[in-house]
Image 1 (cartoon, rainbow, N blue to C red):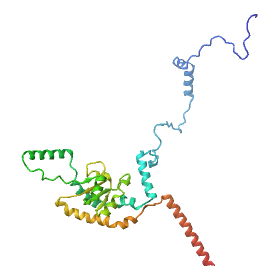
Image 2: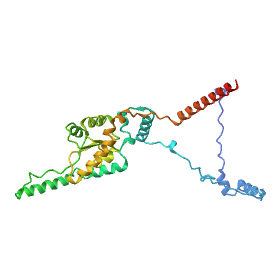
Image 3: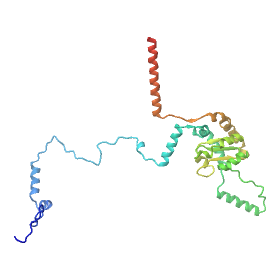
Image 4: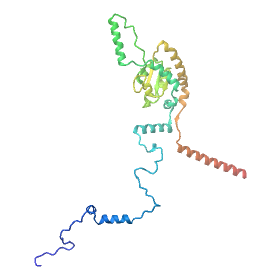
Length: 292
């Protein structure tokens, strides 16, 4: 027709509206052809008695998982990984004698440590409440006209590296106890040498936390005993004799003993393999020499 535009090439000419097909659910509800077809299929299906139905239960595995060590798969906290790495480095690298003397193998044994702690615990620093009550009692006695000035303060252990160092330099300390796991170690590194020079008996105790319980703190680097009651003097003298023989008198042994240098399992296996190969070669050479 004249005046009408021809459709562009590739474009489809729109036709009349299509009617949407009836949903299958409605056909099934009405008992349509699909429902009849399904019933017919069920009748025709033949069940073989040799094959049993085994419905799957995917929520539960057929057998339990094998028990395994999950240590290598565990994400440990950062402080644990750091302390393990540090311990491993101390095993592998060569440790000089001044540092190696603080190794836990060089500390007091459990029996000696118990005796030292039992003595130190008798001279624990008093709590704030105990000090308050003592001062209150003294004030009441002073008000009553009693002599309070002549009374001495209770004997206690001296704590902290600065205080202990001063007491050692003045030769007032009778016994010095140092923790083995002070970090950084430089805080207490000089103290054993200073004690030896000044002739003060010293010992190294396992765990700064254990030493901290004596002075009512979480941790403590070092403590010193200056005075003890007359009842404990004999006990202190015995402890000093034992401690001197273990630490002060063993100065030459301590300054010669190096730590670390332990090989890993892989390195040991490699070393053993090389030694085995060398032994085999020497055996061969000896055999060849005998035959010749």
